Image (cartoon, rainbow, N blue to C red; front, side, top):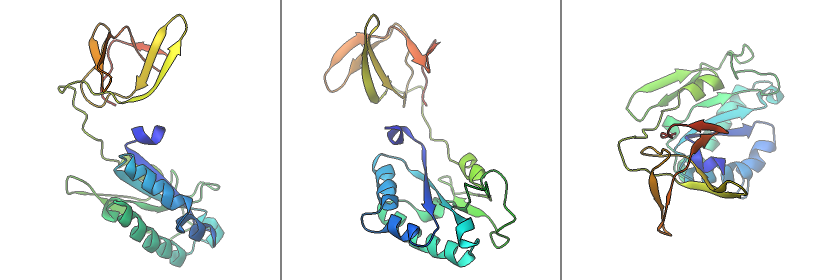
Length: 201
C-alpha cells in the first residue's frame, strides 16, 4: 500500500460529538489507522482535527481531543512532542492553507524535530512543509523494497517499488532476496517516464 512508502501520515480526526469518540474507541478506525501507520514504518505524524466548524470552533473540544489523542498515539509509539495538532474545517478550508480567523484562541502548532530543534506554524500546509526529510543515501548498496510485480505481455516482468538506498540504472545486474534471483535491469521508469537512473525517494 501507499502507507508503507510514506514518510509522514496525516491522521484526520472528526471533532463532531460522537464521531471522535467512535474513532478512538477500542475498535475505532482512528486508532487502527495510527497503529497501521506506525507498524508500517511511518515515523512522522500530523494530526488534523477536522469539522471544527461543527463544534463552533470550541477551544475546549480541541483541547479535549488533543488530550485523548496524545494518550493513544503515545501508546502506539509516536512521541506527541513531535506531532503538530491542527484544528481545521476541510469543508470551509479553515487552517488548511491560510490561518483561519474563526479560532482566535488558536496560537498555532509546534513540534520538536529529530535534530533537537523546534518548528512552528498555524496551518496544515505548514505542518506538511515542516516534515523532516529522511536521509536516503546514494552511496550505500541498492535497497529497493518491492511493492508489486507486474507481468506485461510484450514487455516482461516489471517490479515496482521505491529506492531506499543506492541507485538503480539500466544495465545493472540486481539480485532479488530472498529468492536469490539475479537479472539485468532493462529500464527505469517513474510515472511512465524513462529515467537514466533511479535515486532514493
